[in-house]
Image 1 (cartoon, helix red, strand yellow):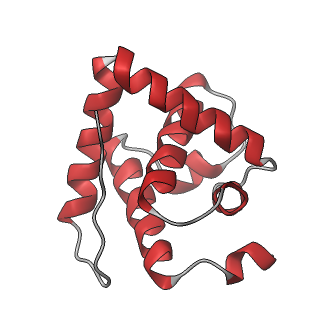
Image 2 (cartoon, rainbow, N blue to C red):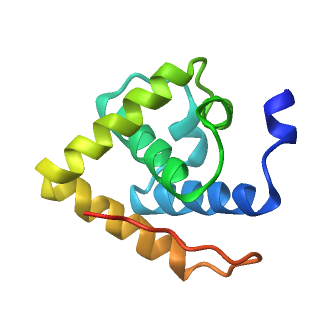
Image 3 (cartoon, rainbow, N blue to C red):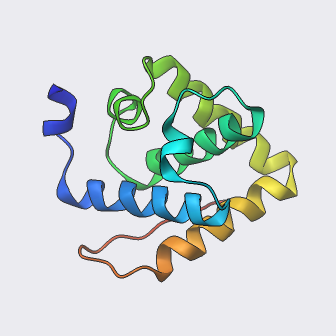
Length: 119
């Protein structure tokens, strides 16, 4: 796909680390997160991944949709907005984001990058 050609090596690394950390944090296989499962918990995990990718990379919504096996950038917009709201309302969402970020930042980095979570 054309979108894939425009994702920088740095952004690819960030996405890979976010996926790895998220699957480790929730003790899930990466493929289980990307599959078309409509389990409520998996959907929320995908929302978190979309949010983290959007705030830590220059990848546009079409690119995020491609990376996590979604058909529409509207679904990505919804995911990002959902987490924006949840992190202000639910302590668990903010704790999950911080836990994933802590894991991401513990990985060896090939490129310089920083994962940020704002309150």
